[in-house]
Image 1 (cartoon, each protein chain N blue to C red):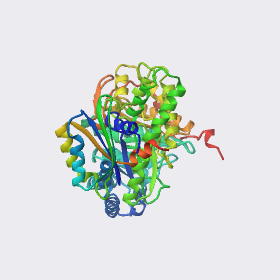
Image 2: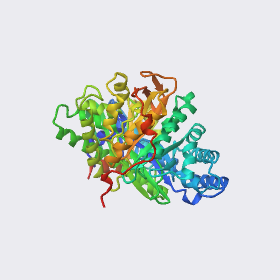
Image 3: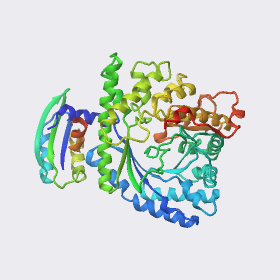
Length: 87
Length: 455
C-alpha cells in the first residue's frame, strides 16, 4: 500500500534524516517528499510505498522520533486523502 | 500527490476536531439458533456470536492503525431476542434473563463494547414470548453489563400500540429502580422506538432486523466537532452558505465511514450493509451538536430558533452524506442525546433547554428524547405519556423517534446524574406535574394515520 507520512512541529536539524533513516531500515521507498513552513510550523509530507509493511511495523520507531524531537507524526493509508478530497 | 492543505485539513479534523468513526457494528442473524430448550438455544447463540465476530475487534483495531482514524466502538447487533423466546417451550422471565446473560458473555468473549438486540417488535400486538421478554428487561439489564434492549411500540403503518406504551412506562421505571445504585444506568441501555430501523449501528437501539441477511457490517460516523469548526469559517454569512459548508463537511466525514465500512467488510468477509450518516456527539469538549446550533447564532441551544437551526443542520448532513456513500441507512441525521453532549448539558443546566423544546426538536432530527434524566418520583404513567407523545411525532412524520429516559432515583430537578464515559452527565429535567394516567390506561391501539395509506 501507499501511505502518506505527515510530520508537524518545530523545525530543527535532522528531522528528514531521522524519518528517512527509519524508512530505509524497513525497506520503505520514498516516492515524493515536500517540506514547507505553514502557519509558523514545520510541515513535511512524504508519499511512501510500504510494499507489504504494515503501519504497526514502524509504529514504535515513529513514536521514538516523535518523543525525541517533539514532533507529531502520522502515517496513513493514502486512500484516506484520495477519498475525502476527490469525488 | 494530494495537496498539502488537504492533507493537513484531514489531520486537523482527526487531531483537533474529534473526527472519528463512532462504530463498526456487525449484525448477526440468530434465526437458526432458536430451540424449544433454553439451554440449547443459549449454546447455539454463544457459538454463533463468538464464531462470526471473533475477528471483529482485531480487524477494527487494524483498520484504525492503517488509516490513522479512530474507531471508537466495535459492536454487535442480533436478531430481536423475542423471536428466540417465542420458540422456547417455556417462555418465562428466568429463561429470558438466561438468554441476556448468554449475549453478555458472548459479547465479552469477543471483546466488543456493546451488544444490541435484546428487543421485541410489538407495534401492533404482543406475543407470549414478547411479553415475557419485555417483563424481563429490568432483570436482564441489571444482571448484565453490555447488553442493550429496545422495544418498538409503533409504526406509521400500524399505529401506536398503547398497551405496549403503558407497559414500557412501568418497565423504564422498574429498570431505573433495579439499577438505582448505578444512577439508573440500566435505562441508558433501553430505548423505546417508533418506526425502528432494521440496520441501525448505534446503541442502545441496534438490532439485526427481520429483512437482514446472515451477517452484515454497518458503520456509524460522527463528527459534530468538524462541522462546528467548519462553520466558524463562515460566521455571519447567509444560510445558503451555512448549508453548503455543512454539506461539504458531511461529505468528507461520510467518505471516511464508507472507506472503513468497505475495508471492514472485505477483511471480515461479511457483506457491507449501510453507512449511518449521523452526527453523534460525545461529552468531549468541542464534540457537541448544541455548539453547532449555537455557532449558527443562537445564544444558547434551546432558545427560539433552535428547531429551525436543527432542521437545516439535519437536512444538510443528509444531502452531503448521501453523495459520499452508495448505501446510506440506519438513523442518519443529527443526534441530540442530552447527557452525551457538553453543549446540551450546559443549556439544560442553565434552563435554556426544556423537555418541551427537546420534543419539538425531535420533529426535525433523526431520533428522539435521548438520554434525558427526569426526577425519580416521576410516575410510570407520565413516562408512558412522554413515550406516546414521541411516538405520535414519529408516526405522523413517518420517521423514527425514540425515548431513552432515565428516572433518577432520589434526585430532584436541577440535580446532576453521572453515568461516566461516553454516556456523560445529565441534569434532572422537569416533567409536567399534571397526570396523564387515565389517558394512557385506556389501552388498545391508536389507529395508523392517513399518512400510512399510500398504496
